[in-house]
Amino acid sequence: GALRSGGFSAVVHTAGPFDVGVGVLAACIEEGVPAYCDVADPLEYIEEALALSEKAKASGTLALVASGAFPGLSNLLALEARAALTPGATVRDLTFSYFTAGLGGSGDVNLLITNLGFGEPVCTLKDGTERRELVAGDQTIPVDFGEGIGRVSTWAWPFPEGLTVGRHLGISGESRVAMGTAPDLWNVIMTAMVKTLPRTLWRNRAFSTGLAKFSQPLVKVTDLFVGETHAIRVDLTSEQGEEVSVLQTHESFRRCVGQSCAEFTLALLRLQASPDPPLGAVFLPEMLFDSAEQRADLVARMTTTPGTTGFSITKGERERG
Image (cartoon, rainbow, N blue to C red):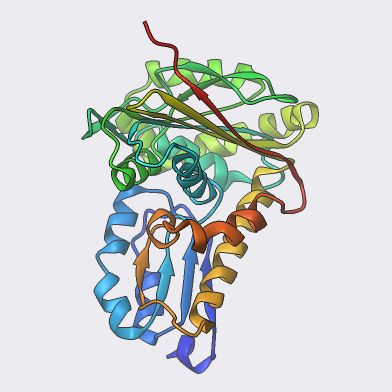
């Protein structure tokens, strides 16, 4: 009753880790809150949230999950990459690559979420079929994040968009989600630890919490030298041989997450206030904003927020032979 009596127009849920169920979303739906956004990324949470869609439709709640920077903004950038293809082209492969340097004071919780992630399965597509593998922190590949960042080692990571956006685009080949950080020494250390310690240990909350508290002072020291930076790169190839790369860079990961979530929330409120508002339901970003016309203003806003240092879409053709 508190939500309804409070007269809230929207609820924004950023209190991760999102491994304790969808109670906040369920409460918003029960009370008929017009708009709901969160920055969740566990696939189990997202699937549980989407299962509430019919209840949200009945209550009139327009809910958007996984609506931060990645996942969130990154999902929309994948749609932009698809839109850059020649009309009629079909998507074969899809890759999301992320880079962050510096926690910017976000504290132990970010480290805890990362540690827990090493114990989670990485969910992607291969030949259009779902695969779930315990490879987080492994499968290292260098990725070029452009001027100012350069080439960075990235490793497989259990974000959901490799699966959810891959499904949405109907890709026929493979999807990949990977991330890297700075200094590169952290990538080397974490990769070595993941190869040494069992995955079950990383899923143990007490272990991951203790490791986060232990490493926090070390991270604060290295942050003084590497600064705070963020980048999203989305690469898409078509069956017809086209290649599209979308690159977004920002001064700060934490600010980009906050700005992205705020823009998603404002977009929901604008939709609710429109002459023909959508029916309430639970959506992922790629579901609600699949229409180029509907997402154009949102993408423009999200790629020009204060602190943004670059945004580009590059199209080429894959070499054959």
